[in-house]
Length: 278
Image 1: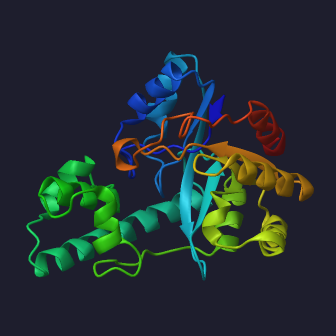
Image 2: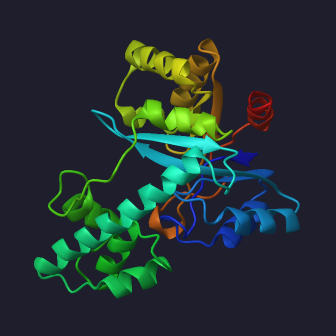
């Protein structure tokens, strides 16, 4: 049992990289990937703890990309925290993310919400702020009754306080991942809001750019959806990967490695990815 999609406090998860690895070990996981949003700062901490616990570890990242409908997220596996084409671009994205978070804070303050930049940074444990940190502070102050309400009412795309991010195109992200000796994989493909032949056609286009896999075994997909996506991946010679998308308390109802309880990503996925890397 492996988990190739997790988030720590270095992006928008609630657990430290070390605690996340410890949870994976106690959950019976044999391999874990850390895939924080746009950041690779937590990789060495997670890798060190994984080595201590004799747990296989894959360094990675999750990147948001431009897409007309829905949401496009790209996972890049085996991305090392060293200088490189994608790594250097991530630094630019992180700087733009800080500017975005300051703009979001200013909008909330101007609207009369009792929120300060300092307490947001404290909640995140640094400048690695994400919207879940905003939602958590809003919940603590009684502005909303749940994290989900904060998104639905204020923070999600199309809501009053949404501030857009600086995004790469899918082609650019895939090519940067390849140039950095990592493996690009499409995360939770149903978030693209493309179905059937349309999704298959687009996956074929992404494969031609260099995509090597598609996240088929995803926590909140039904067994039928997982099977369908795995078959599509096989048809297109893509690796059917999987993961929980664990965020700790910031995304409730998900356990590391097990998702909502029925997630079981085959160990063979790691073998397939390793072959592609070679």
